Image 1: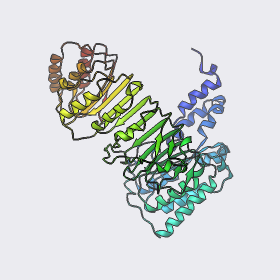
Image 2: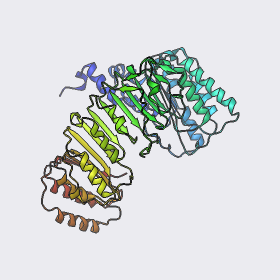
Image 3: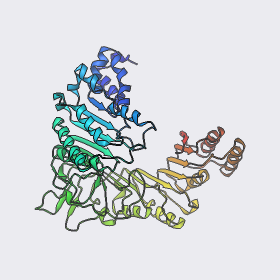
Image 4: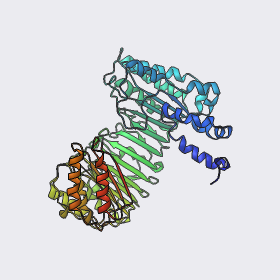
Length: 511
């Protein structure tokens, strides 16, 4: 094996890109990448543009993470975090002129206008900002800012809008914008709306996760990637030319959403997403897997097509056969569906046999009878011939008899319930092509003692004394935190004995 010094610069840069991949997300991750610069001159020359390409103001939660309250701390601690930055270092070394990305992660406390003023003053009027192409702005939620205040109401809203315009003038070359907040504050919404409107016409990529609306009078002919969380009707949705889009994620209010926001050419009734390869339609619920009971509307006068769509995700949206029919002619290779099992049957409109992967998830507490579950799942997983078929299902509160199901097409199965180990093993003969099994039994082992665990698994060993004919090679088991020490070993022995082709087994805590 060659010494690391013998590796070419190109190879080392590939390695350093992986090592510093998270440096742009938040100040804490950025600091973790700094030691790479101190190893030697060669490493510093190869990595300095990777680390110093991002200016960070604020040290809140990672912008790419799901929104959860930050660590409980005092209001003054939050204020100190808001002012943490690497900008002074980049200015003193002169490397700020090489920066291409600005990440602002702030946690408003009490009066958000003060925070907006701080952001404006922090940016100043440096000519170096002309190199910034990516702006990521996140307002974080804590126990301190569920209720925010305004001293002057309408005047503060106008001031927030002016600050957004001033920022857009200073950061004049931004073509990628990410704004994220769950704070339903009028002033912050006005700030986000104004900032979005200032930039929208020049953007190539937009990640819009805020209650603010950009407005239908805004137009884009450049967008290639977009995430629009509050994708409302045509009165508040910006007009987007569909031909340039390559990846799109919409989280609409389905009872209002209209495809008219992509009706760029008013002389034609055709909306053709020529270059779109990835599409995700998701429920409007923030981070909660709840099926939406209102279907996405489909205007009869519009002809919508996706001639090059490869990857389709339908997450908790109420789909109808008409919506699925939109994708029947698309050359799909991957379909991910999460929602009601009865809606998943609509997927049969597609040519599922040409897929490389189909994943169906029903992870929420849907009201469905045991008989209906077995009938519908059997109908779906009887004759699909694609390479990978994944079924993730929450069977809590169900009394399923394994002999009532038969899923010959499944290759991957994920089960979630309270106590499930024996059902998982009962299902093995009913899924002959299964190669991967995950079991999330979030109460298994919780109230067990060492002795009761021994007795429990002894009964299971007697029940499954003969090895199965299963082809399963990988198993993941997730049990209750605080289970007896012997619980994992006993479970491992049981699965290894019953699954003779098992190569890998992993155990962790069910969350």
